[in-house]
Image 1 (tube, one colour):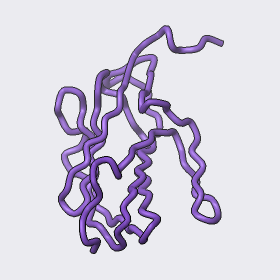
Image 2 (cartoon, one colour):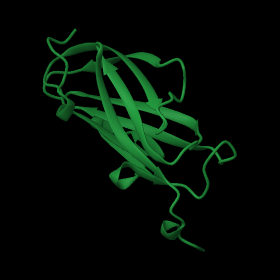
Image 3 (cartoon, helix red, strand yellow):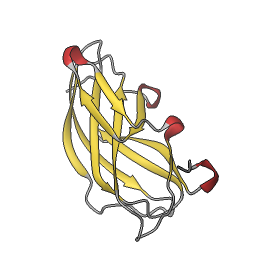
Length: 141
């Protein structure tokens, strides 16, 4: 177990549609959402589902395992799921850790500011992302 958890500034969230781990510890992100903002043409229970990847970079200088949980909170304050995912995050000295969490069927139920909440040994890191419905930003074929 690490001596101490990372600070909030040492935990980053990137959103994308998919990620692939390459040789030598590299990652390729596909469909990256700049500014952690997802623009969808429609939202609510009838919205089409799509895959989203929560890509956490943990810049901890400590080495060891964290007991971790993850859940998503909607703009209304409701959790997306009643049961947070539980897993281990392994941090290596000087390199930190990467944690990839895939939602294969993400349905944007509400527009507004959402929270992706990662807990490491009971310390919570709530990272914000936005779901918008701005038709002016959608390209037309």
